[in-house]
Image (cartoon, rainbow, N blue to C red; front, top):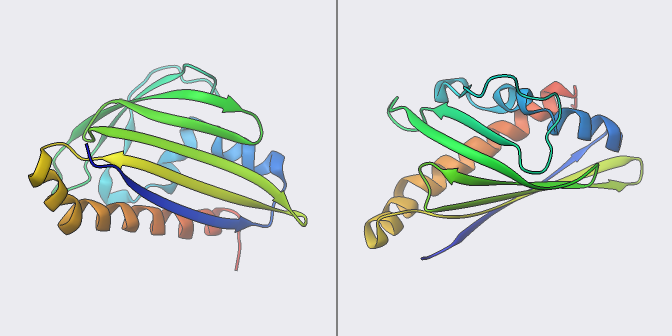
Amino acid sequence: MKKYVLYRETILPITMLEAWDFFSNPANLSKITPAEMDFKVVTKNLPQYIHNGLVIDYVVRPLAGVPLKWKSQISSVNAPYSFVDEQLKGPYAYWHHEHTFEEKAGKVLMKDKVTYSVPFGVLGRLANTLIVRKKLEQIFDYRTDKILEVFKID
């Protein structure tokens, strides 16, 4: 299984606590996901903050409006420094997303590292080259823009 990595860094002029409060609240994920993906959390009674073992179900429409079910689990939490979400069921053969937060000169360096694989062997690798990678980059570009907007960063 071929694995790919998407890596992003964003500097946030906020405190670690503010960063953690926002990013560890599962309800905020929809605020930083492109509207055309029609992202919906379907898990009922979500806690205000993530915890080890939390399972979250979503429905998302990443391509051509086709609905996909996605189940993820928070597999590691080290508040307020990091957490990991992993796909249990969904469109990827493998999905491991590390979120880290590091205080830097009164700001927060936020890092996202997504390690993923696509299904379907050679066809999946071709799809990654032609579609999947570009779509993931667009989603993370959008997330960066929305995060900067949420925190009113010029």
